[in-house]
Image 1 (cartoon, helix red, strand yellow):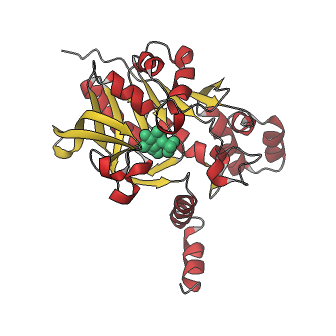
Image 2 (cartoon, rainbow, N blue to C red; image 1 turned 30 degrees about the horizontal axis):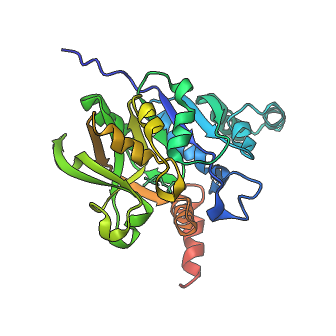
Amino acid sequence: MEKMTPQVRKAVFPAAGLGTRFLPATKAQPKEMLPLVDKPLIQYAVEESVRSGIRDIIIVTGRGKSAIEDHFDVSFELENLLERRNRMDLLASVRRVSDMIDVSYIRQKEALGLGHAVLRARELVGQEPFAVVLSDDVIDAPKPCLQQLLDVYNEYGASVLALMEVPHDRISAYGVVAAEPVAFNGTSDRLYRVSDLVEKPPAHKAPSNLAIIGRYILTPDIFESIEQSQPGAGGEIQLTDALRHLLRTRPIYGYRFEGKRYDAGDKLGFLQATVEFALARPDLGGKFRTYLKSLKL
Ligand code: G1P
């Protein structure tokens, strides 16, 4: 019999954070617009979403974030100029950015936490399952991470979180799950049934080494759970706390995705992503490798 799991069509991109870790670069520029090689961070995340079949994008913005709206909009002057100069390759890459998605924006007036940001998208999402994508987490994977989560969602019809093993001394920077492995698609160490979640626990209280990474498939009942949530870690309305509330009535799964994740919200992670993405570029990789070798580190 056909399963009646509703399709995931929309993805929410929280982008109202202040970007304090990248000051002064983010004083007048959204951190989501910092470029890895020649593409802004948020474009990598949006492209992952498009490659996973989700074109309906909802970006939660705040003050000082208008560059994001301009980036995904049509730029007539620029397109006109490139056309006159016969720069068809650049024209195509600029057009693709605005053509690939249908995008809506909603403002989060105050940065009150990830849960609060997601709740702002409630009207635009409606009563359907949806994805949440944090563009700080850049994930390089042959099968897009979001698609990996969707495969689980399509099987179980329940919320799914991206998970990654993190060393003990880094675990307190993440949402952490307690979870039991479940056999899936011929694997027994990727899919987990979540039994508890805690946001940024001190290392000695972390229930495991499985951290939540910024990709989620959520069922719409999460909105009520967010409404029930009190400020948690850092005084913010946390998505992790709302998931814990949801867990009382609904199963939640976690998937230890295949791929390499960069924490581009952190300076070192950002530099690592920059180097590796540049090395992987056919037009730059060779020369860049030669340059790096010449540094004799
Ligand atoms: C957010 C989430 C956290 C998750 C992390 C992944 O935290 O609240 O649960 O582990 O993203 O990047 P943030 O990094 O925004 O503090």
